[in-house]
Image (cartoon, rainbow over all chains, first blue to last red; front, side, top):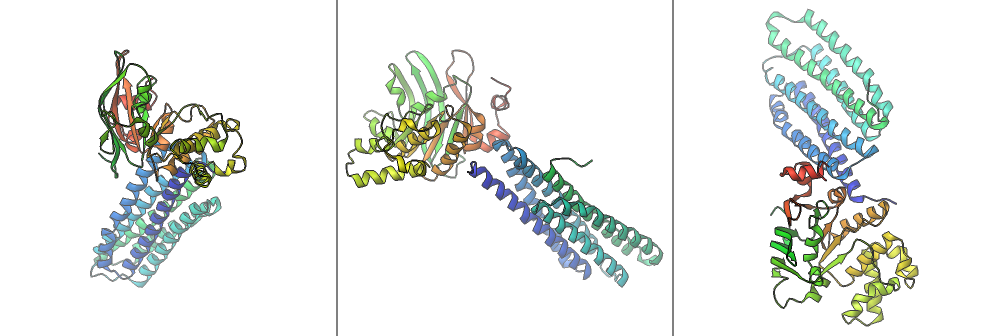
Amino acid sequence: MEVRKSFHEKLEELYLDLIRMGNLTIETVERTQVAFANLDQQLAGKIIEGDDDLDAYVTRIDGNGIGLLARQAPVAIDLRTIIVIMRLSQHLERVGDLCVNISKAISNMGGYTPAPWIMDNMDEMFKRSRNMIVQAMDSFKDRDEKLAEELTKMDDKVDRINRAFLTTYDKECEENEIELVIRVVMISRFLERIADRAVDIGEEVRYLVTGEFAD
Amino acid sequence: MMADTDNKMRIEDLSMYYGSFKALEDVDLDVPARRITALIGPSGCGKSTLVRCLNRMNDLVDGTRVEGEVVLDDRNIYSPGYDTIQLRRTVGMVFQRPNPFPKSIYENVAYGPRLVGIKGKQELDSIVEESLRKAALWDEVKANLRESGLNLSGGQQQRLCIARVIAVQPEVILFDEPCSAIDPVATQLIEDLMADLKKNYTMVIVTHNMQQAARVSDFTAFMLVLEQGDPGRLIEYDETNKIFTKPDDERTERYITGRFG
């Protein structure tokens, strides 16, 4: 027998809204990758404009989440679910902001042609960061603590690629490429932060499943 | 008015007296159609008195009188000559203590329709079944319709009372602390039922359980007696979401956060 059907339906709607936001965030990362690969300034502009959509999700999820907390006095898994959904929306919104930052950097790279090894490296970082967000959201959907835990190792890898890239870049770049260097280094850093956000999402999932906070 | 629906009832400048004692003062309140409006406030604030004004139940107490209007579908129910019998069919009531008649489950529900002249067995059977279905009780009692309504559990008796109200085709259903005498699971069943009933009926619920008002209602009215001996007043009325997240009046906030008795 199930009671409080109306509350559970609203909770389900909140959950689905967060899933949709997750999908939009992953799509945004993918589009940002395409924008970078092609140094497509028009696409970069669209990504910047589209950030309002992600912001709208946060506002709605916050409002609905707070309403449920105020009116339904949720407990146990329902309470943790609402709290985690609200926190996840903040992390996803931040990923969107990082994509905006990357897009702004792309917009200032007109006229440059980064060397293939740079593009390959960045492509690798884009892929890994994108995959981490996907896995983070999967861990949430499946309430899978193990999947969430793997994100820490994946993040270490992204950090190592980022550090190696910066070391190599330092040796390889030309004097007249300083603008390009700055942009590419920034983008690398933003991608590393996207990966960090995936780890944060994983920690929220761990709290959701175990009810315990990370040390 | 912030509702996305019209008002089924409007309370306009209502004051109510028990003899010389003023029980309510200058209440203005909208009751939106097919929504649930909750009345909350400390004991003695006048919420039950107010809800009983909506179907003139207070008329049954000697010496009561009202000033102002209660409008149902654009007619003031306190206008001279208003049909109070029909009013109490249109605006039904469910009370705090379940009060089924000492009759069978079937007869409890059929009683009202019989009174208005419905005699045919098939028609009565159909009304009884439909009313019990709408009250989410049919599956539990369909095999025992001839048993006494008094043999049911408290929660079932209350749903039987709701079926009894539904059987005479109300448009508004008033609930005066409907769950205070029944257990928490039965309470939840009735709250779920109210959410379903919203599709067809306008509802007003008086409850001293704030959390219930928060869970179940679309609009909440907070009432208060400011000083001992004063009449009850409406302090704040708004969408329930607003009342329980950011009420405008400090007195409302003190009450709902438990900082006020």
